[in-house]
Length: 99
Image (cartoon, rainbow, N blue to C red; front, side, top):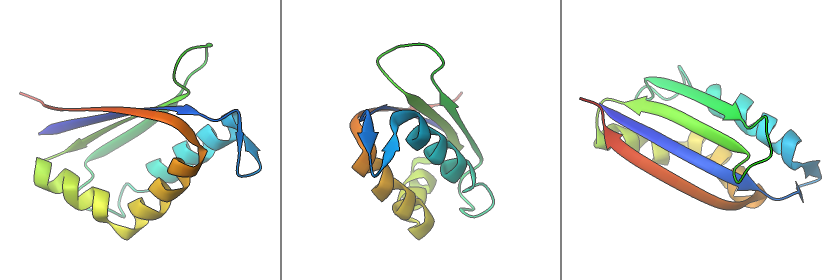
């Protein structure tokens, strides 16, 4: 199993919305991929509630690295990811094996 964690620092304002509004959009849309992308076993998006370096965090699980790569290429994910790229200042990720 693979755990995929992504954190975003969002632009204060982008695409006509505040960082908070964009974080909420990301949460709703990324979590809506459950049941749409078969390879996505779990998905949770948190929005930071205190001032910090990152505004939102995705934690998702896949059976394998190959499944994670399939998820990244899925058209529904690509559409959401395209928006996320427009509203972010930076992104970090970590992928690791769950034993």
